[in-house]
Length: 335
Image (cartoon, rainbow, N blue to C red):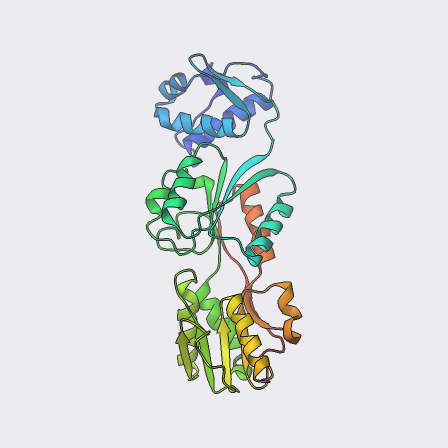
């Protein structure tokens, strides 16, 4: 029965466990297997094709997660649903929730168009939480979208997941680049090129100040900023906190945090300093509100809506590409 239902080729580039999944789905789709039929056992498949039990179990766990088969302890696995093209089950792991991540999420869900169930989790930059969430959900989902943020030493944690079931979002590192498909930002080059596009306006300021607390913010923001300032001989400073800094005329501020953005705007108002004339502001990450606040805040931002669309496309087509998301400097009156 295993030969008729399951086909595994040693010359195929497709992972063995994926071939098992597709074989069983095809057998259900063409009527070889019907609801309630018993599926070839793990032992019979592993023996027939010289595979480890873990490989076969991996395939069965995905089929169970998708609701296609069900297990009966001591008896075996049975076809639960003949709706084999049903929804994918997606594990979506963000570092934290924010306005721009909400944009990614909404665009992702809309672009999936009801073809997947998505459960969202947050690790809050805690490596123990990150590890626990992944290991506790290995067999519950068919796909894993992971936004690690700046977490380090995640390679061994991610290794418990099948490589072709993982998509990395937003930040790449040496531990993930070239290993997993991704929708990512090139923070260093995007920062450099974005600032370069506004060079003429930036040069009218006496000093360029970047607030960079570190920790959560990608290092590429800082390296791209410093590269830009050095190449174009811009006087600059990097500070960790803005609330201990006097806002001075002639300064331009690059602000990753929206909390710092509010602080600078309020300080400018208190000193009757005009944005775009007396001081300048560039905020990192765009959102609709920044179009109207203080007659418009200039932003350095990727296209978060496009990121969600690309992510959905990779997931639905099971594509293993890595796609750089577009980014630009959006000019408004604060510069």
